[in-house]
Length: 400
Image (cartoon, rainbow, N blue to C red; front, top):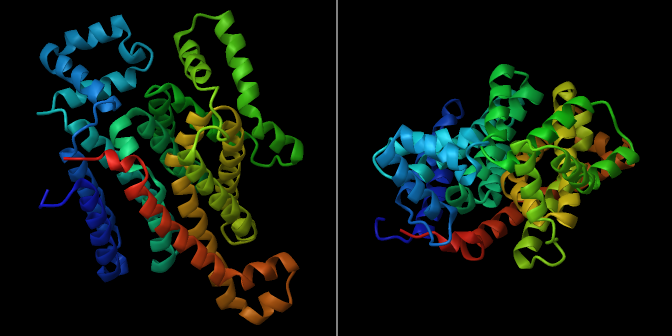
């Protein structure tokens, strides 16, 4: 495209976004997000799936649906292709795509949905919490750098399920808006793919344990995936429900690999977890001691639950760990930074650096003293991970 490779086009799109973001007046700050979403979708339209990608298999089914219409869809339900008799949302999604002129629309629509939703969350959070352009930009940069574009374009269903869940969780838990649509979104995620149940379950846990804390509870979350696996096994043995059987089958097939044996890619993903965990600790004071505490404590709880659960999955289910890292942590890391650092900055303007440094508790004083260091480390890490994304991640499979 335009004489550039696919990766070069991806980089060019990000550069275009950066330039547009800084020259666009704040009241039109939504415009760069729309443009980058559209450009990412155009890039996806022109990509050629790798032979071993899920996308290649999906293309064959799209061809069948395009030729056979509703009869082929009914046949897919009957034959339970890709477990579509259970995950009918996915089947209808593929059927809708098959009505479009060609198969390339599958990854195009998918990318448009996931990036559109995530940029919408960033934009809404920026407006809702009065985050300035710099903090919004750095949060967005972190998200773009750590969200795995190629994996969601080539895998389709997992990325959709996880991203839709988080977007619904933000509006449900934080802004408390469009709750009915959020519930619909959760149902869509659950019946898009077997693993869609996981992020929805974490939302439910966050909601019902909002005021629960303590080391014992955190311990349960840390190893919840192991206990959950045992419960799933028991239920799978006692019932023939297709949904439970599917979830258990997915969990059992990926219980062998751990972060200790999964190689460099897993370790790179683990560094994202370390960065976001550090951010969670660093901004915890501002999330829980501000004018927005009632809303932010729900985001803080949901983020905490995800992190504890991810540590457990790193020990026993590396594929689930990957999915949470690639499609949930990037947006959590973006929101924690942009909101937390904005609240901290507002407090500094209101009370002054001297007072917050020398006349506050030690943990608060340390946060103020290390503010510049956190900015530098966060930005440098986002840039380094962007470099890794382009040269060492699955992005090297992207081609025209």
